Image (cartoon, rainbow, N blue to C red):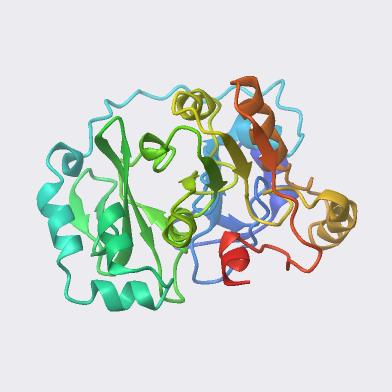
Length: 312
């Protein structure tokens, strides 16, 4: 066991799970570990968060924690050949099952008030997701998820699932999924475009306000710089960056200083997560887009999302 891992473990703490990983508060997004739910876990080789999507080796984890990793020499491992997930080769039968599920409309209605037209327009479905065992064999999940297909340049590159139960993560990706800027290829030139975290909230905006376009990144920390160029190619009139009203999202504005103090009380020894909203705005502007950071109203609760604005 390396000295660096002992330093990381001393900073993060946590509880070892049945898989031999340690469940702890995510040092990147601040999501707290909860018994029976898969959020952030780490071990001597590194860590991964199923909430914000952050992942990296032990050195990366040490950098997030501001630990000195100068003398750390990672173990050399044989590189495995990564093959394209088999469901991505011919996904149409799977997508058809999601769209024709008899409980699809009712289950979605229990989550957000989307019309059947909106569900059909964006291919939102219901069903089991494909995952891969460590031995490379594939299986379908026992649990059914609200499914969101994500395309890039016309190709399906991700299947995301929204959990309606109480056990497990709120969102999960089928094995072999890649993050992409949802709905960017359908942004109409000259329109006001809302940039959200939640794919479904983005669809809800366009349902109530057809004059708008909307895109979603899937989580505050999943933004990629190249997405600014991709969005700029669609020539939106302006972009409103509406990440969630928290430290890791739009940052909190004038409230941030107090939020940081509160966060440090609950997470001693950890640095508060950086605000991603201002970073996204700056990168959009650098790409030539007129971008604005949403100024959340004073009465907006902590962690409010775009759905709070729509409902209000």
